[in-house]
Every structure is written in C-alpha cells, then in structure tokens.
Amino acid sequence: MTTTLTPREAAPQAGRSPEASTAVERSLGSPATEEGTTPAPGLARRVTGAVGSGLWKSAAILAFLALWELGPTYLASPSTRVFLPPLHEVLLAWGKLFEAGTIQGHIAASLTRSVTGFGAALLAGVSLGLLIAWYGRLNSVLNPLLELFRNTAALALLPVFTLLLGIGEESKISIVAYAAFFPVLLNTIAGVKTVDPLLIRAARSLGLNSFRLFQKVILPSAVPTIFTGIRMAGTASILVLIAAEMVGAKAGLGYLIVNAQSSFLIPDMYAGILTVSLLGLGVNFLLVALERHFSRWRTAVGAAAS
Image (cartoon, rainbow, N blue to C red; front, side):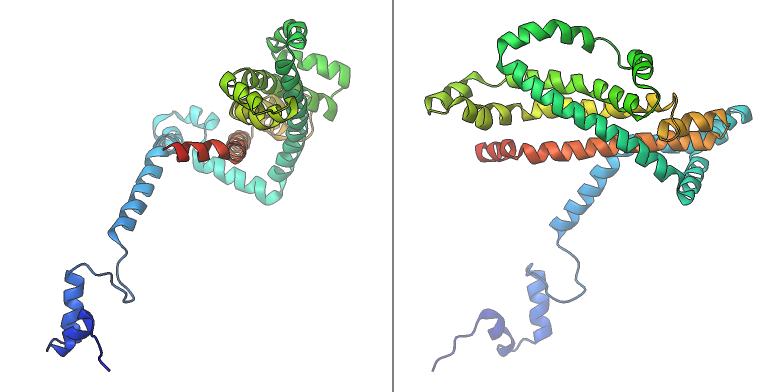
C-alpha cells in the first residue's frame, strides 16, 4: 500500500522541524489557525472604515453637543447660563425625572395621542388618496376643497377644535389627525399618478383585471412616495401634538415643557425638549425601516439589474 504525502507532511520528513515548517507557512501567507492570532487585514479595514464612517456622520451632532456643554460655561454670561444650562445639567434633570417616573408618564400620554391620531390619518389618507387618484371625477370634485384645507395651518384651527371638542383627549387627537392627514393624502395621490404607464400597459396586456393591476403594479410602485408622506405625517403629528398639549393639558411632553418653563425649572424644560427630539428621531427611524421592508422588491430588482 503506497502512501502519498502532502507537502506539509513531507516537509518534516525532509529534515525540517515542525516549527520551521510553520514559520515558512506564515511567511508564505497561509491562514493561521492558532489561538491568539490577529484578524485578517480585510476585516480590520472594514471595521476601521465602519467606525470612521460612523464618526464622520456623527461629527455635526457631536460638535453641537460639545458646543451645548462648553458654550454656556465658557462663552456665555452668567445671566445667559441661567436660561441656557450646559448639557450635563439637562441630562441630570432628565435622570431625576426618569427616576421619579415623571418622564415616562408624559411620554406615554403623548405617544397614545400621537399614535391614535396618526393611525386615523393614515387609514383615511391612504384610502381616500387611492380613490381620488384612481377615479378622475372624484379628484375633480374634491380637489378644490382639499386645496383649501391643506393650506390652512393645523395650529390655526386649534381654537376651533378646542371649542367644539373641549380640552380633553378628543380635541388633541383630532388636531393630530388633521395635521397628519394631508401629507399622507397628497403623497398617496402623487404616488399613484406617477406610476410608469408602460408598467400598466404591460400588466393589462398580460390579462390582469383592475383589482390585480392595482394590487400587483400600482400599489407597490406607489409605496415609496406614500411612505414619504407617512414620514412627513409622523413628524407633523408629534410637533402639532406638543403645541396642543401646551394648552389645557395635564400630561404630555408639551405640558411638561410649558409647566417647567412657568415654574422656572429650566433644566427640566430642556429635558422635555430633548425628549421630543429623540422621540421624533425614533419615529423617523421606525418609519424608514418599515419603508425598506415594504420596498424590498425594489432592492431585489436593482440588485438583479446590476
């Protein structure tokens, strides 16, 4: 029986020690398998590149936070520092509000109102937008009225909602739904109207009926534009709600901000403002993730084309 030796097995038999063979393998670039070796240079470059890219994208935010921390202390006068505390004092105030459970209650109240109004606006805006874009006569009838109301600021109607619905939850949810309705509606109409006519002709030539055409071609093609309106509506729902909570509310981030300002609790006021910013940022990230989920077919088509 003849045994064939590989080069690595034959090297020690040719008078070379195992240690020398390992050194030769390392010098020739063979992958090391011993514990404690350094990672591959390609992986290290990717990690370094990712860290560098993250730092570069966060440079403006880090510079703003540094200015907020150092500016009031070293650049502003003592009187200005009273109304613009440094960042660490705001974070300490936020921590105290969190330990007391105050900030969680205000966030829950604001989120409940915002999500309820935003959900109602989303359902009504997408449904009506699809109908208006699909039926031309309905568009010609409703378009003048929609143009009138969409150019009326939501906060200008806040006294009307308050007088008609009171200072309870109904008025705040209604003003949020009104503010979020028009971005969703208008972008839904635009998304359906800007579908490529060639896609529609190709689908009809394949024998798709109106329902299947709408389901398989028009709605998927309009999803990116619809989600643009949804993201705008999400931001509007939070901003309008904060303004509404500053009038006749007993809970919510808007109430926290205006109550802290009237009580001269300036760090608490800035803590509420910072919470609103982070909440809006989180909502935007969530909507972007949903948009990517519902637009996966576009990524697949782009990858196949490349």
